[in-house]
Image (cartoon, rainbow, N blue to C red; front, side):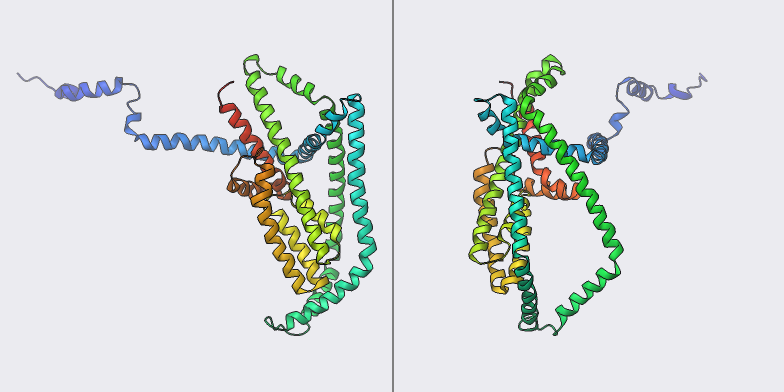
Length: 373
């Protein structure tokens, strides 16, 4: 009658329920809400991906020169490949590659020589025009609607001269650093040409060798992904060169009609700048408007600024959809974000390579996610 029921025997139902909870797998997880568990799962996965992306960018930053060389080699290959394939139907492929390279070197060297000759011929006349243009700008700024004090531009020029004199050593060190950068660029260009020779001559065999290193069951999938990547990259490269050449021709015609000096160098600048989508062409035309302002006055400069708007509309609504629409299928917002992100990560070089890299990655993902044929 005086039995002691202390401990778990006092509440047998509660003890049984605790035993069932301890025996049930994952019972402790049920105390954490489902939403919190899901968010935690995504959080640590995103953290791992972020760390991997950071480490990848750090490694790629130290390998910038060979990566740029390979990228440039792929650009050269995509441009010269149709010409080489056409020549290879009549002559041996090594001779076709050699002849295509000689034609490319002669074309690029001829354009650069012509630009240098044009600048040298117009230098004296351009110097006189620029000095007169600065005087006209100063008179224009002192009138309506700016009403600046006389001598403001002259004072600015004197301050610039004083700054150059005071920081001559720093500017000299910067110039020497720029010279080392030129050496690196020449080294990368030589490496790119060396790689492109082999890509043009035996790129198909190199791709087949790379495929044989993969397991047999995944070779067909990666073969389709590689072909999609090359089609996208080659289509983008050829398309953006066509767009840049069209922009340069339109700019050259307009500047020649407006009688702006240095037409050919500004055309080359527009061609190079147009390789950066959305932002490159306006920057080049802004420089052209400054030249027009100094040489021809405010009215011509305003006409050149209007040219920026017109060419921007043609590039965005006609040239890009017509030339690049079949090879690059990404939204303009994605293009803009890619250019800005690439510029933040790697400067001008990142802005140039961002869109083709994103386009190729998107094409590969689409091919890997798609059904097998």
